[in-house]
Structure formats: C-alpha cells, structure tokens
Length: 230
Image (cartoon, rainbow, N blue to C red; front, side, top):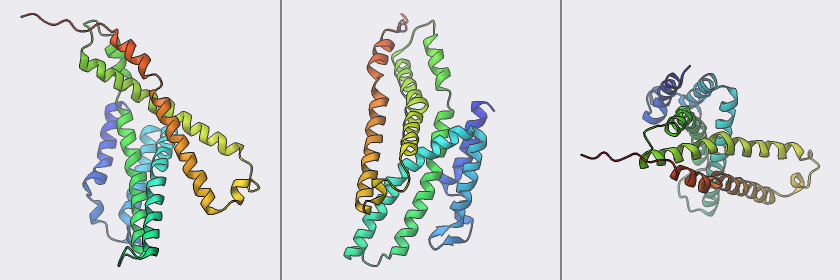
C-alpha cells in the first residue's frame, strides 16, 4: 500500500473522531457515562492502524499516546478527587467525573495514534531528498520545509523509539517485588512517576533539538533560487 492509500484510509478512519458521526448514533453504555461507541471505535481504529502501519509502528504510536494520556487523565482525576473531598465540586459525584476521565482516556488513546500515523504517513523523506537534489536552487520557504522535515523525521524515527527503548530496558533491569520502590508509599511512587516523566520530557526535548544548529548551517549553505528578472 502506497502512502496515498494509507493516508486516505487513515483519514476515513479519523472522520468519526473529529465529526462525531456515527458515534453519537450508537446506543448503549458499557458503564454509566462511557458509551459503547467509543469502545467499538477504539478497537476498530487500533486494528486498522495495525494493518495499515504494521505492528512495530502501531506499538510505538500507542506507547506515545499512553505517555501523553497518563499525566493528563490521572492528573485530572486526582485534582477532581481532591476537589470532591474538599467539597468544592458541588453536586458532581465521583461516578460522574470518573466516567468522564475514562472516556477521555479512550479518546486520547484513539485520536493520538491516528494523528501520529496520519502525519508520519506523509513522505517527508521524499520531500527532503527532492529538495536536496534540486538543480534549480532552494527557496527560503523550501529551506524552512526542509528543516521541518529533518526535525520531524529525527523525532519520529529516532528520538521517540530511542526513549521507548531506554524505558523498556530500565524496566527490565529493575528487580521484582523486592525492590525498594515497590515497598514505598503511594506518595513516593507518584513522586517516582513524576520524576520519570520529567526525565523523559527533558531527554526528548534535548534529543530533538541537538542537531538543529548543524542542520541550520547546512541548509543555509544550499544554493538559493535565482530571481527572475523581468
């Protein structure tokens, strides 16, 4: 399947997420506040991404979606719980906001992989190769596009897989239930989690921008297009 067919298939698959149709016409709730439609759509979208993009890239995009969703969902749920216990949420019950965050988690785990797959399906490698091999020079907008393509390819195909590989290897090196981390309190575990997420974020940012100065110099040295004289 070429990139145009993949992009068309993913675009059709993303229509319900952005338009709401036909999700709003499927009745029933798996639990109160969590519609069956989003469960069905989540399963269909994951299977479709698996078929279109392959198991390796499907696992990468789903892992990225989980990393993005975890602090948003659990952080928001924690804040809502604290507000509920303090009495500041009024008539909002725990069941209502819990269902909201379950639906939010399903939505993010569906939409984020779809968006990542749609963007990465675009042939940025071909665009970069075409601009570098251009015999007529490279205009300023094309140089900007070339920089974007290089940074994007570096983040998607190097930075994200490297970070996920490091996280996986570190978890493998951790001992079993006898580790000190497993014996500490829930507050300490949250602190460990926030520390890990901070390190992942800092590492991702640093790794994403480390080659930008070199690429900027290299791209600036490309011959520009000659202005046509009337």
